Image (cartoon, rainbow, N blue to C red; front, side, top):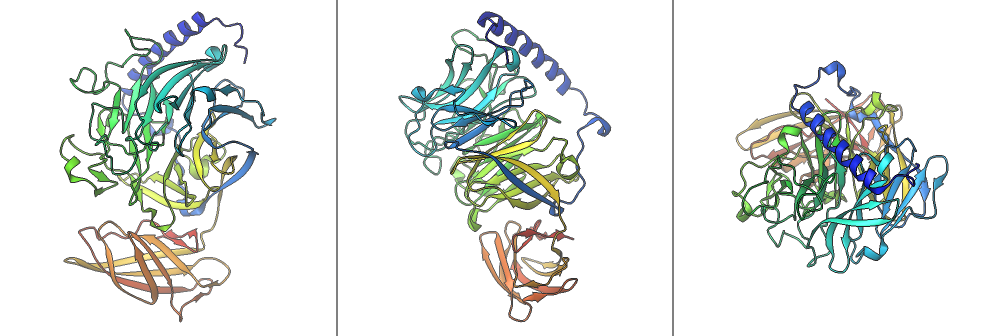
Length: 513
């Protein structure tokens, strides 16, 4: 990238004029009717349980990596942010460069587990401007900050900060340019637990929010401008930078540039992790619910009722089986695995390393499956300009390429229920679809909200929160290829009598239906 001969004033003029024009063009495009199906990015029809996610480590030696950016400059590089305040460069041909591209350690407060350099993205005109945008906790007071960094002169220019001194956790930190050309930034609710500042439902603070600002120009005393169509622009007592609110710790979010959807992984309090998806028309002013509720369940009713309709998550899961923090990912839009996971959202969990796959089912819901494991303690996903996925993991600090392959599920589940009043009986038929006997088995699945198992038969069943582990009984521990066992349970319900949406047998996804 030859940026040394490009003057600062020329770079700023170019970025400002192109970005503003780009924003106008995208805004007009987003107001058009949806594209015909033939011109939209393809969505795979391969059943999710027939897909397995794999990772291959391609670099080591990173120091607590937190985020990945891929400049669309034809270089093939990845930029990897490290918590201490450095940015490292990886190239598939030459590996991980030892010398950092960026070093802002003198500006970084990395005290506590969740402070540091937290987010990175390249300017839309990076090829010409050489500008990055960084999100970090700043010295001396731990304020969460977004800044512009000019690679030409190693100049850090803070743009916007939010006080965050009381607690060191829940800083958020994701940065991304949206399809409209504006910069989006996530901030957590201020930390500790239980939203002690009631930040989620307040609009007079930037805590617990996703923000939207125009960094291509400045307005008055601001180093940026507030887009006029921001939902709280001009609203008395509200921060105009707010795009959506009601978030706990939206550590990672991403845009699906095929349709403009915003996907958010919002870390839960301890009972529910959640993934949200909002299409462009649903985003402005959306209230994601925290701390009125966690996931779909009431959390603090004193925080309810002040902000209109709440936006439901599209996926929730309980951390009660080893999970702890959702790591929001990306919708796969690459070419290499489009036949398997095209149009599929891929995420993981920091503790359990489960790979979650979500896909629009075309009927208002989402198909879901657990399709593999990532390395331990993944902190972020990144995508190349071509749409191929990578992840970084916290400790021991590696970069991993993500791939997918088609597999034959080892099991098939059919599920039937009979419901009455506040009860239901369920029968599950578990079939060995593999070619070798299954000797000893554990079937794990989540029950729909409000269902509680009262008794069971032909299995040793334990319910922990929404999660059920059904293990073999003494008489049915071996299932020959092509053979089946039947198990069942009696449950109470609160109105939802539907069947579980996903199953794993000894850690592998089962076909359902």
